[in-house]
Amino acid sequence: MKLSDAIWGALLLVLAGALLWHVQGFPPMPGQHVGPAALPSVLGVGLGVCGLLLLVRGWRARSAGSVHWIEWPEWLGSRPRLVALAALVGVNVFYLAAVQPLGFVLTGTIYLFVLMIALRVAPARALALSVAMTLLIHVGFYKLLKVPLPWGVLQPIAW
Image 1 (cartoon, rainbow, N blue to C red):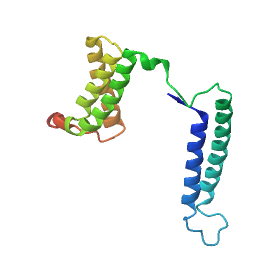
Image 2: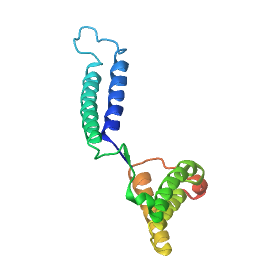
Image 3: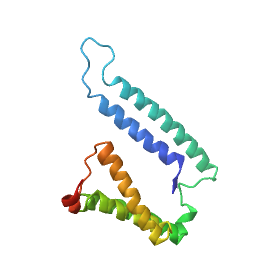
Image 4: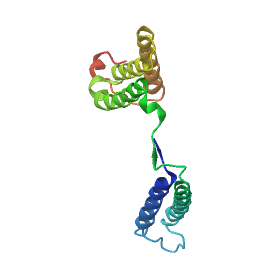
């Protein structure tokens, strides 16, 4: 989905206004001319200028009749691509819900397997790659980088 530049410009203007309004409450630094609101204020002005430019550009293009407010992508009518998108969203929701109770190894294997099946990888190959990649990622993060990944139901065999 592509939104018109006018919509993005309006959103940036709203964001810039909210940022500039928020930084007004920042306390001044004693003995300093530049306080903690200086950088966010400059960023807010920059966002506002960019938003205004996008808004004008989008409005001109819309007036010329060459652009719609919202353009839907062609792939939206393709069933395999919609299934792949649904699989992508579904596995991310699944990961968030299941990583603590199941553990990273099982959740990661299921995650990768479902994505590979959605991308039409042969099931045997998808399973082998899912297990190998999950174990490789686990070793890299758990052993080398010391990131505490959850073990879940595999806690009795944690290494």
